[in-house]
Image 1 (cartoon, protein in one colour):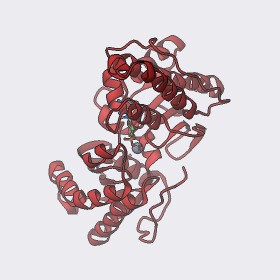
Image 2 (cartoon, protein in one colour; image 1 turned 30 degrees about the horizontal axis):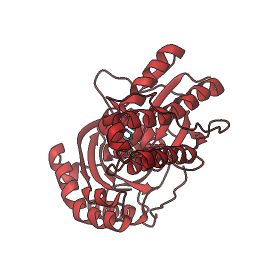
Image 3 (cartoon, rainbow, N blue to C red; image 1 turned 90 degrees about the horizontal axis):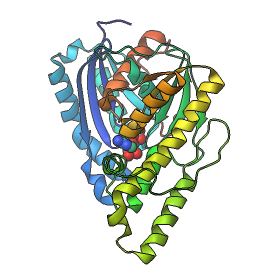
Amino acid sequence: MNKELIVLGIESSCDDTSAAVLKGSKVLSNIIASQAIHKEYGGVVPELASRAHQQNIIPVIDTAIKNAKVKKSDIDIIAYTKGPGLLGSLLVGSSFAKSFSFSLNKPLVSVNHMKAHVLAHFIYEKDKNPPEFPFICLTVSGGHTQIVLVKSFTEMQIIGTTLDDAAGEAFDKSAKVLGLEYPGGPLIDKYSKSGNINAFTFGKPKIKDLDFSFSGLKTSIMNKINSSLMSNPNFIEENLNDLCASIQHSIIQILLDKVEKAIIKTKVNRIAIAGGVSANSYLRKQLQLLGQKLNFEVHIPKFEYCTDNAAMIAMAGAIKYEYGNNSYKDYSEQASARLSF
Ligand code: KG4
Ligand code: ZN
């Protein structure tokens, strides 16, 4: 890995506008502008997200370059999120990246957002080693839930995926039923801290192999809450912490059961977690405990590299630039909402 390579990363796949500058694998700056506007709608509104990206993109990139204390001409490559994500949002970041690359005459590298979540593990962190190959990465975000077998920087294979909702969606939809703001995952995490995980039990999915399903759990949670509200209109307020803890425990248990299965199936005993849900404190703790019990290595990224961020896009861009064999000035390459892995 070229330790001197200066990379500008640009992320705009959903509702965070982010820009980062890396030197090799070291983060010089990582700026994230989150869009509060979606809170009042209970979810991301694509049209509003694109508009907010348009407002934010120049100030965010300007701040990232200034905070990194580099000049524009010092930037060696420009990496941007090609997909998957919301098309209108992706178009803002990708169009900016192309123009910037064109004006500076520097290579342009397109990045797959889901691979970037995995490759966030290679961002330099003091006193921490990245996972050795092969490792298994549980990538859990608002849009995806995947178990990925990572054989090398360029060889990744999805060995398990969700058949319906993503784990983050399960958190956010449950939170909505509880009357909590979007995104509900961090709030469920917070309220769970003083709740009882065994207060309520919800239906457990029976999905074969390494695949997931969360829609049945959502129905089970909704049924429990609706029937309880009929006899006690204050049911949610009176039981909020216990409800959150029980819901969180159910979602995380589904994930951990599959991690255990993946280790048995692949015989790979190094597990990494990535994506927004990997910021969940209960998942982080329970995975460590399971690792100690079953004797597997656990890799958990810093909070700021779990949720959407441009540092991971810059890292993935640097890796693709060094290990791939692509053309790096393809200005006709299109952003893709459903970019495959
Ligand atoms: O990776 P990410 O930032 O964006 C996507 O690519 O989707 O993930 C966002 C998801 C949301 O569903 C959010 O509720 C969830 O990550 N999330 C959490 C926590 N922090 C973020 N879920 C549970 N506990 C958390 N602490
Ligand atoms: Zn993401």
